[in-house]
Length: 337
Ligand code: HEM
Image (cartoon, rainbow, N blue to C red; front, top):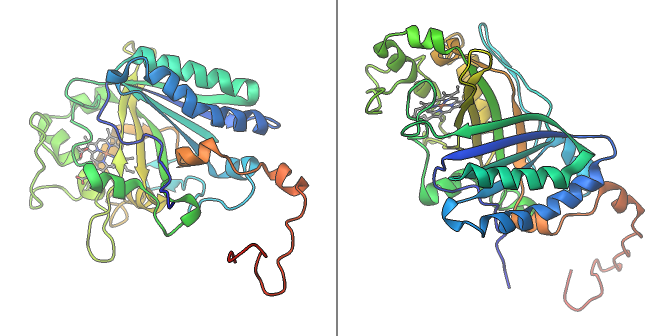
């Protein structure tokens, strides 16, 4: 029977809490990471089934360099490292990362429990390069005070926006995901008048209404973040940003940006427009008040992939040679070619 690969649970309603764990894989840690990847679906079930109303999901994604260390065989067609951008004024750096674990739920206790179990499974095979705990702030606002996520696609449009299709048959049902951690300069932002803040975003602050094209400044965040295909149709991504941070002046606070898409070039184009500008020089005004301190790109494989991993690269090269096909090109088993 034909079966469609089952994706990891990326699309949920907006949850109240999230934990983002970013790891590099230590030399020699590959086998342990493979074992942990296979455990993740079961760990998700073990924790989420204890409180189904809290919408727990733990999604694991794999970076470009790590892919070839973990798996033999084909790789996702568009999996590549995060593309850094250096504009005249602002920079989007690429930072090292091999694995992303994105955990979300209405209950931070459940996020913690699943994160601890996954971290324990990964053990000393990995190094943690970032751990961010995100929280809901009022009516889904960022710490800059604006509602974030409004223009996300929903329903079938969201599925289409994030799902690899038949263009890459080996990885159908997977997604690409980009992350950046931003650190805000809230005191400068809060010095702006509400009108100037609204001009930087392109929406009103209190009631979250988009400005008309006649008044929306070309360097506003939402004017620059519209990407269209060759037919002029908007190409969407699904963002699941979360505010995070310390309340005391000693720490930092900001936005953890995360966007899932069916191909990485969509988020790359958004970042190019934000940092280089469109036209070049007309960069995103929001960037004058927030700094990207990390940037990484991953592929999110399906649940089927995690439950039945391809062989490890070494195992593949040690495996007995595949029997040669007969001279007629068939495998010699019935009608299979
Ligand atoms: C500090 C970081 C960021 C903050 C605080 C932020 C905040 C916002 C806010 C408040 C909106 C308007 C409401 C909405 O539709 O969600 C928005 C829209 C959007 N943002 Fe961001 N964002 C950030 C980074 C990014 C990045 C890095 C990207 C892409 C690479 C991005 C892509 C988008 C897109 C595609 C929209 C919707 C545009 C539209 O169709 O109207 N954002 N963002």
